Every structure is written in C-alpha cells, then in structure tokens.
Length: 140
Image 1 (tube, rainbow, N blue to C red):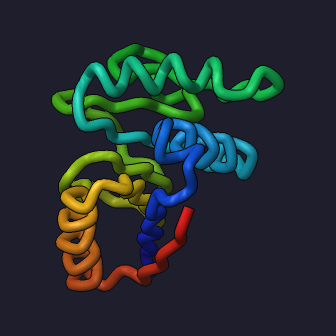
Image 2: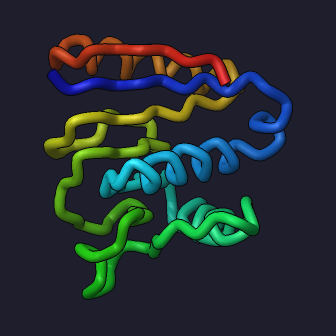
C-alpha cells in the first residue's frame, strides 16, 4: 500500500526557512538510498532548493540537479519544476498544491505554517485517502 506523510511546519527554524525541512528530508532519503523526485511549485523555487541543498549542511553531500538533463536517471535527488517530464521514482517530496501524478511508493507532503496552505493540504489528504494511501501526520 502506498503511503503519504504530511510534514506540518511548526518549529521556528522551519517557519523561517521551509526549504530547510525539504533539505533534511532529501538528505534522509539519500542516506536510505531512495531515488527521489522533489516536485516544486515553480522554477524559482526549484532554483532556490538547488542552492539550499548545497548550503544547508557543510558536511552533507546530496547528489542532485534540476530535471531536464541526460543524467536525470543517474541523479539521486531530482528537482522537478512544473513542465518537466520525468520517470517515476519510489519517493516523491511534493511542494505543489495538487496530488502528484504517477506511480510511487511514498510521498512526503511539506505543509507550510500558513493557514491557507493547510487548507490545500486537507484536500490532498482526502484525495490520498480516496486513492487508498496509508496516511501519517508529523508536526515539524
């Protein structure tokens, strides 16, 4: 059964920099050798995340790149802005406002502290539930 984990941002360090949580989730996925897609809301967010993955921990190295290169299949963490087509992977970190299409075993939903973002996450929660996903919530 596929699983969806909702990470609700609450701690000050993540409120100030939500991409820090995304970086930590990507680091954990890479450590677990899980090929990962990170679906961003737009291209500027994809670029910001690319930079954040280089800078968030000076001792960490997470092989990553923006989607659209011939090396996409060989890159551990692929950052995917809207409009880029990629092959499915077992793990998806979703920063978009919709349930991602495709086949995957697990999706991590990062939900901002903003009440409007929480409303959209409730709709995605119901959609995952309708699709038969096991659901979990984590306060971060």
